[in-house]
Length: 256
Image (spheres, rainbow, N blue to C red):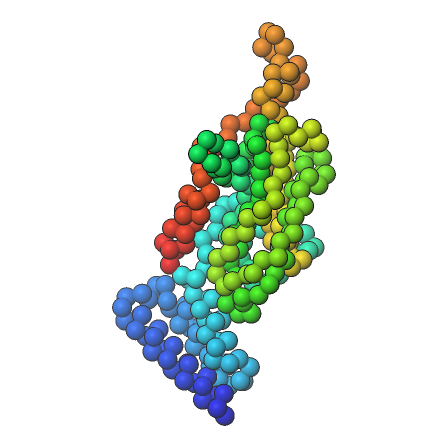
């Protein structure tokens, strides 16, 4: 009886809050939330399956302003992952995924995101941004990264124990994959980054790796014509990781 009274109290409080938001002119955004909240709390009040705290967390996670902005890279990576048998079916939301290039400079080490890499780049590290629900979090999770070259050979494997908190989690491993001068890397072309969370595949991200400038010169004759087919790709303007994360946070706040 006490549990049901608590559920009814939460239901009444949230309905009052929703009515206030609707009265303030937020009808187009909040109408669906109102219906969802009413159904959720009514069910919990009748069945007693959820405590008030659990129902509150479920309701907050369903609100539009708590849904993270998703990059195009994340959409493509999750679509690729969804075709696999080990695709993650939990409530984790992939917000962004990519490769960070390390650039040593006189003023220190700089990081930038890139999809088009060159063997002239010093080293790379994968990163992922995951949005975790409030329910059952925070908790310890195992995040696994794998990078495979154009021939399907694994060139980078890293597992991280990460304390997953509710909301946005940016996970950048401390380990890196050296590119410049790495003679073990010979398969240029389309590589892929795969990311698992607790055994569930959340991302399959593709990126390109091209030969170094020295190798390209070897493949061109003295007359300037290529001795072997080479596809030269132009990378995007370098952007620092801080700018990337700042942009992500700005998009998230605007989506609310």
